[in-house]
Image (cartoon, rainbow, N blue to C red; front, top):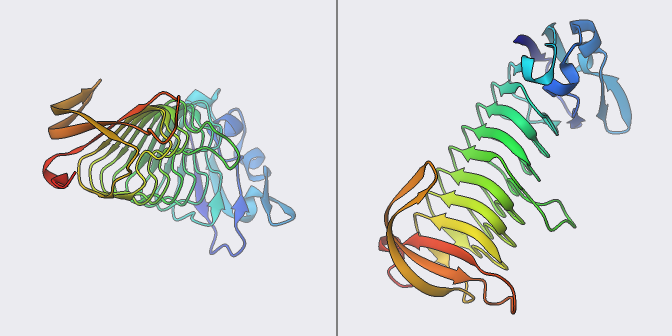
Length: 269
């Protein structure tokens, strides 16, 4: 496997659109060819070398190419967008749309991630060691279908609308989430090991959500079905006693999803 190292040059004011930073695009290219790839900053087309020092070369294919970003890139958007193989390691926090439309390979973010990470993701692994912003694994505005496959791991907490429109794959959040987790979910699995604020599973018509902590404001469109102990989903085990609800019955004539929440943390339900 060949390795390409990108080192950020100073601070970026206007955000940079850099969907070219993928193993697919870097594959077979020399350092000079990678430096000359075009990114957008506002209305201007600029070379990648205007923002990064480049070392190394791409491999024979996406799967044989590894990209290491040495530092914070919170002002850089769309890193890893649509990638099909290989790996990206970001040694710092990252900007919006990281891993959007990802279709294979692995991205490791050693920090926080801004909004829309893994948007409409199809396959691969996206691992964030810090917190994630709004819309992780979500559908884009105007679309009904979010993440369809792959896995997103968030070691910290996430903000609102995690997995919105999700129809496949797995999202696991080690911490807590804010509002409308799993809104319009129709498939796949979301696991929140902490708490949720409100609107969990709103307009849900399929899939599974597990909240191992408390849900502050529980939706009235869910009906109690059963109590289960130690949930198992393939290689994922959620230990404890969980109340199972089905819903969202606010959607008349539609399929229902499953919402599990901790019995001990939600004694008022």
